[in-house]
Image 1 (cartoon, rainbow over the protein chains, first blue to last red):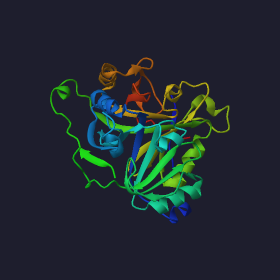
Image 2 (tube, rainbow over the protein chains, first blue to last red):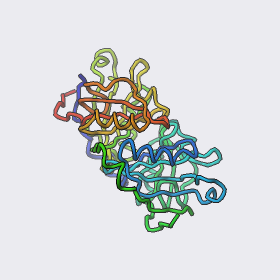
Image 3 (cartoon, one colour):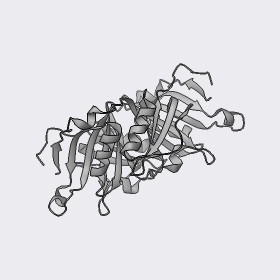
Image 4 (spheres, rainbow over the protein chains, first blue to last red):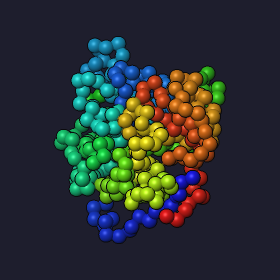
Length: 166
Length: 166
């Protein structure tokens, strides 16, 4: 039996500085393209996940029978999981992650401040912070790799009002 | 700009059967031992995560300066992230995952039914469902690998009343 302890979060100096607040943490699971559609179905059947929305890659839509899934958003126990096709020729963040498939999306209204704080703490930037849709969010998107190999997408919340009929 | 669509979750037959409800989804990040302690500090500094509790490996406590972290529970934006040391000689679930470090913990009061349902959907059992503490939960713990290589721990909620002073 393992010993368990409550941990004090040393309130004080370190929290006084630039406080960035996050609104959500969403694990994004990449699967070999074009299996994301199957994976979504599996998580629905196996775990009772509910698909909330799906974003597909528009350039692939005409060429392929099954459009590549940029991001399918699933709800499970009030939590969000994203499932995405990992395309060979894409710049999917999972390709550069030591986690080999999982990327952690952090939503915040303060993308630049959050990226700056992460870099100051020892994360490494993966490219520039840019405007544009990412697989999990909208608006500004930054990408950092932490010292332990995990990739975090730091981005403003997805604009859910831009829903388009398939 | 990607096309986005709202998705209907075909209510009906598939949901009538055995409904298992989950209470939480917690990504568990494994890092090379003994760096979990550093990783926790990093996530606190970089993202403002708060450490809620920590479970250490009792057998290592006397031998090593830094006890192995079985699981440190961090709160971030109301979500939970677990950070664990991945020991070479352990049976950590991350060792068998295609996700190379991330395991997804699903909390439920109905562990056996949930495991059964996942297996019926196409997941593969990783060992037996057993009683005992796992890194992320307490009580019964089952482990399955989905068809896309991701490992899910299905377990009853951690018994938070067993807090012990370090």
